[in-house]
Amino acid sequence: MAQGDIETYYENGTWKNKREGTDRAFTTGGTKEEATAQGRDAARKDKVEHVIKNQDGTISEKNSYGNDPRNVPG
Image (tube, rainbow, N blue to C red; front, side, top):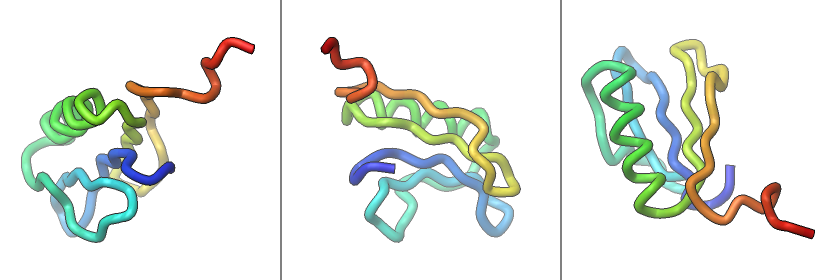
């Protein structure tokens, strides 16, 4: 993940969101769906990628809301 991307993940029985490059979650609690919605909103606002993980830590989904280098016309 790039610096500032948003990650939705499960830790110690709780769904959380954090920005890449930080150690602390900016949201905690609720269901996976609620955490995903909060992470998506933050990623859209910041125009970054949102990585959503399963409880086991595997990536279930990635969405880009910003300047995705894979979509640059060339």
